[in-house]
Figure 1: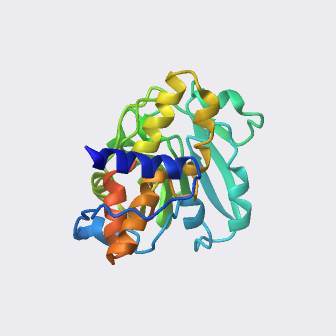
Figure 2 (figure 1 turned 90 degrees about the vertical axis):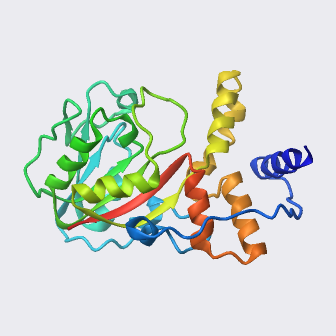
Length: 264
């Protein structure tokens, strides 16, 4: 059917950076969800990820930041602008750890119980790690235990993402909000990350041994709107749909998503 060619063509144009013409698909948008999840969905148009959420966080000077699942330890520089001291936590067998050059302030653990005292940290940052933990409920309870009241949990995780690096779980954004809420956090914001279509195309390119083609999609892991997200935003603007409803649809079709939560 012609609609499939229209959709695929529009996505391909955005993926390859070609000029995008007008498209009129009459996209259907969900109503804005209610409850804690609905309240946390970003009201802002466009792409907003955790690197923007971290700016200006109200944390005490001389506090502590834990990089949960620190991998190569390449997020150390996030702590100093906030007046925090960086600490890393990782499992000893993580794939990303092979790129770690600086092992100072890194603690290793078995993947379940976190070896830090109660209320030790003012900020926990976790980037694409929760989809790899063996026991999510225990992990979220442990993070809540080590964060002081009023402290923050910030990061991203997977929803509709293909299996990778021994991944164990994918979280619907709504269920994720419920799970960390049950652990003791109020979710302040949840935003869509790279979309499911772009992640699938990237995976297929790599499976077909076209790693160079896969690499052109790297900018879509940050603040550049990925092709499906960009198409949804364009349709929302044309149809006069509020950004919260556009973001709700993007979250339904997200490969990854971002979150910011505060400990009660």
